[in-house]
Length: 288
Image 1 (cartoon, rainbow, N blue to C red):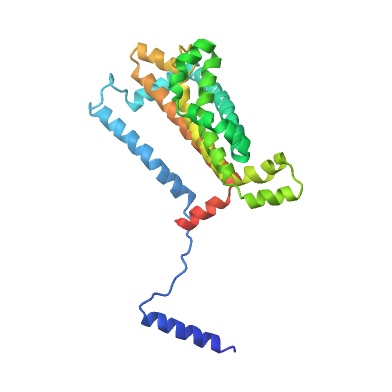
Image 2: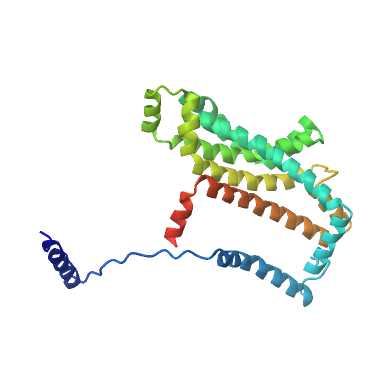
């Protein structure tokens, strides 16, 4: 019995070689150094910055079109020194944060209701889908009539823009929850809220984080539109003032800030994914 297994294995290997088959080899995972990953991620932005500086130095890009990186850095120092940049950042971040909180919470609650209960889907889903097709920029005049030129209009616009991505992701994630597991929890006497909290939300976590990523990105886009509503403070106000005085350096600063806000939002969701779903890192490492 002890010698039959090796002979059988040898025979099977010989037959596989005679048939032209290749013996499978296990692929070893080679973890990529974190420093290398950081370097690879910075190559793209550095290339863009180098091209920008080269175009400004050669005169292909003039100051009236776009200021050079050195002039933009000087503008950052100017705005930081007189306190305008910190004040504008505080106002804009507050607007985006409040709008995201309202929108993501609303989308999450509606998504769970429509995804978990048939009555909620029949009553709410069709109306929400109709509203979802309306571009949020089309609501700017209506919000100005309803709320006037106030912070409420800006926060409400951001909230509307960020609610629908979270709603779609939450509703789809909840619907994909294993129904057998839900029925098993009901048989143990768990109520609806307990099932949602312990089974449905953890199962829908990947979809919820994807919806949060989309909502956070849209909060920055909606912030740009909201700050066009006769703002007297914030990054949008700085842009309007820079446009009036043809300060392309300050315009570039504001655009870069909006981009950095979007990158920061994406980085926050990535950190949440690593903390809440550590198994995804193992899957990504195996796919390399």
